[in-house]
Image (cartoon, rainbow, N blue to C red; front, side, top):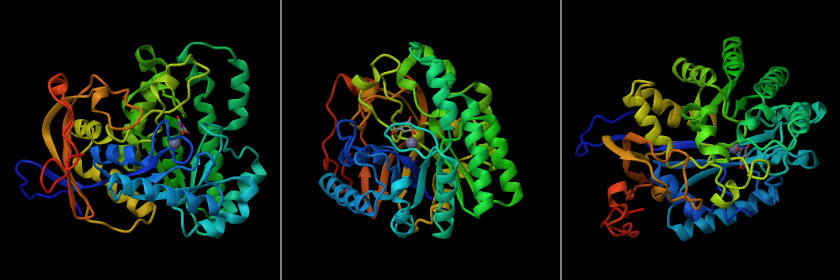
Length: 408
Ligand code: DOR
Ligand code: ZN
């Protein structure tokens, strides 16, 4: 389905978004998020399908953990009464490589952390990395990489030990770490004939590497995150550890290369990397504060605003947020839609945020283009959000308050 020309009372229908990269935190991180709060947040962002990462506690690295996680998610979605569509990544862990082939049927991809991030998952030796690619290719499973080179990250951790300025985060996890890991991952995809998905690509050089890999005919796909497209190193000054994430924010030049990759088809998808942490956790000093930011509620308004400003077309946005992830992850088609008001202007506030973490690094931005209704599995949800003006006056509408289209 592409953009609908039908008139929905001034609203435009687009296919509901697929977010190929979220951390909804269950099991083990429920103080930050769970699927009851995250499903409401996703609907608020016009997203009806999410693909969830394995860095849980316990990590999702065994078939048993996958089964347990699915049960937990299904129970939380049932409580929310929102049948959000989801897929799970299987976490690569040396101790459980024997389970990769079994996971190929139940998970959307094998996730390999090539560098440490939140949680303990990492594959930091070349032999194991080679084996993971070989097994995934054999099982016809997509390989998704967090591409940062752990050896270089470890050296930088020592070099910058004790640093207190959050902006140092981008030096501690330098571009070179991402470039090295992406180079290595593409070489392994070539060697084993694996399909490769590069998560949250952040640098100009990686865009060039992926462009060349595509020209060579390799099945290499790339994701950009909303934060690397809409935030840069300059934002540490205002937001400090709030905008600390892995891979870190980069320069405006890198950001512009990502936009170029969006426009010329080098970048295939946009993920939120929705990785909520509580404000209390994020407000700790640099070194203690965890990496990651929320994103499912702001992805669509940020992109619609970018469409309004001519940074991409609406059709290209639909490719990136629906058609391409559906193809790459081989997801079953659905008829879910989002009705967006392309002309509505709203200023983002923390109070709008339905994610359990309750904050957003985009607060204060006035964006043009907002989702108003979502149709998920044939059921309409009306989106209510507190605008700046309404903030003082009223409480949010309660679930089910608007007739046949329950308000979320
Ligand atoms: O910033 C990040 N946060 N990057 C990751 O790779 C993991 C994520 C999280 O789970 O918090
Ligand atoms: Zn992530």
